Amino acid sequence: MNNHHFIEVVFENLESIILKADRFQKLTFDSLRKVENSREHYDVFNADVVHFQISTKDESKLNYNSEEQPEPLGMYTANPVSNRVHDRPEILGRLLNFHDITSLDFLDDQENMLSSVRVPWSEKDEMVNEYMEVQIEPGYVDVKVRKKTA
Image (cartoon, rainbow, N blue to C red; front, side, top):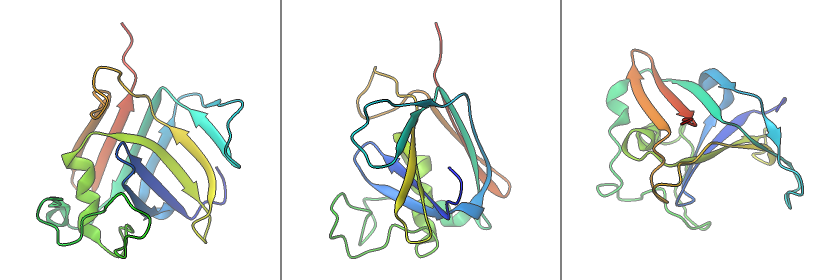
């Protein structure tokens, strides 16, 4: 996962947001396990713990409500509106409203896929990941996705 310039946060409904890599103040995983027989042309990993912190200068810009957006993120590839946080800072608030991250994708400077890390997902609900926790702290958004053991 070296040489990445962007990180794409992918959600359960295939929406995503793209952030410049330097916005991540912290990004840690437990031991990564490579997915064998992946049909992708890049490396795919699974993790039981994913923890990251994304810097934010103005917490008021986290007020994202997809119902009120004239152009929400959308689930289609022809969406003319950017899913890049540096273009639309308010979409970072998507993390607060919906707990449904499925993966972090690492992209090069041309936004081509380099590798992907799948976060743990609770099977109790197909649309909400009970393993995901989000908190707003002064200067950053803290996200933890941690598989709970019985």
